[in-house]
Image (cartoon, rainbow, N blue to C red; front, top):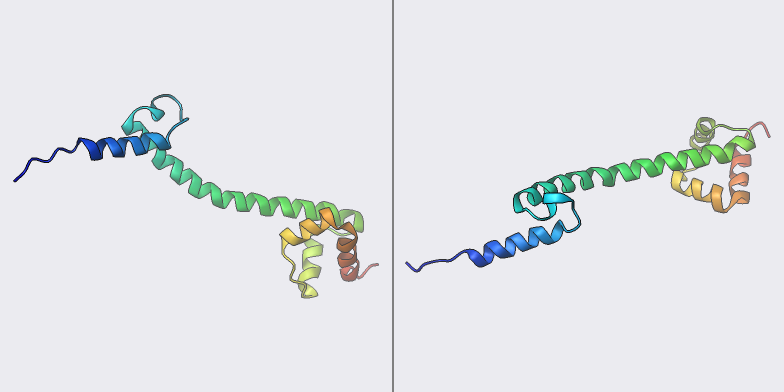
Length: 117
């Protein structure tokens, strides 16, 4: 059986790992074992934070909508309740964008819902 030298694949694997950890601090960017661990943790955090980013965006939209409906005599919870009751299916992202960029349109939506005015 011929002799197999494994230096090239190992070096390639090492280079690939170390290339991905460029910019990490201390031994995490230079030592293969620490770099592997750093990448493992970084991947887990990235996965979790992709979901947290969506959660944070939704919370921001809710705050923006609440800020927009307060001067019109409603609270966020009453506003969303009226939307559901009137079967208006605009999501929070669209409502927040309307409140910010198209205040007249947003006001018309609120006034069409509001039984007081």
